[in-house]
Image (cartoon, rainbow, N blue to C red; front, side, top):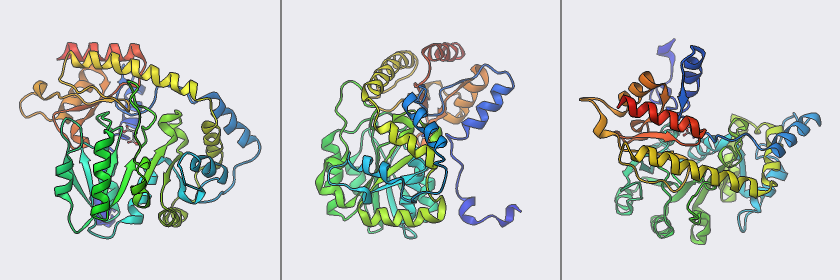
Length: 378
Ligand code: GLU
């Protein structure tokens, strides 16, 4: 049957982060003392108000089909966060992963190019390819945008620039002036900007978060994706959303109506409760993550060169000095997993070899134990 698979699916690789979920379950079942710093998931429980609202929605039999664009109450609540937006600007999707997939399907004609700064999240390029588009990678400099490089990469085929800040896998937060330059570039060359803001809530050191939505000049060409997964520790609920000009949002809903239909109805009721939550609990969680960042950064920086991340929950150290002859970052991560039981993601998976991604949203004792084991092996 393999010969029957489409050439499209044969050129696409499975998610290199999501593959850790079954792999680590298998290793744990075998009784191995595994510590996962691989998958990007907050350490916290889903907040009680979210769980309660979801249970209550189930008790009320909120278990039927719903509006393909998302629950009206949820879209109204989300739109209120974006000046000038109404529910017609919001599309609720199965996580921001599906929002991004749907965006590329809705934007790309065959051969259209999407500029992606690297290193970058594992699904961007594959999703662009699945839409018939061509990812065009531009290196970053010390994890910050190379604006000249981005401008030089623009061609007649460029459809969009993808910006992910705070960044996965580096934790870099891009400063306002750089985002303003991206906006100018997009306006000058008539490009769409796609802003993956899944980690918007996780910015540390009292740094103000600057969303591209703040730039009015960009709004008619800007599509933002955000997620409940990280902000509210709801990864398994699969609720994310896009904020887009109405024509784009309507196209996405048309596409989604043939793909998933609505997002799980009772999960969306949980999301409505999440938006209504006392933000102080969430702010305390962010402070806790900042402490974890400090703990993990000190442990990592004692072993490898590493740029201190100001957002998200990843460290992206340069491990090249520890590579054996001919070894790649994938070999290195494999060696660490085999010898220590600590799972980390090779930088190669994000388009930058010689590095690894380490998720620090883990219990402190596990962080200490993981780095102790890694230090011993090195
Ligand atoms: N976004 C998270 C990560 O990068 C979750 C897994 C995935 O969907 O890629 O680890």
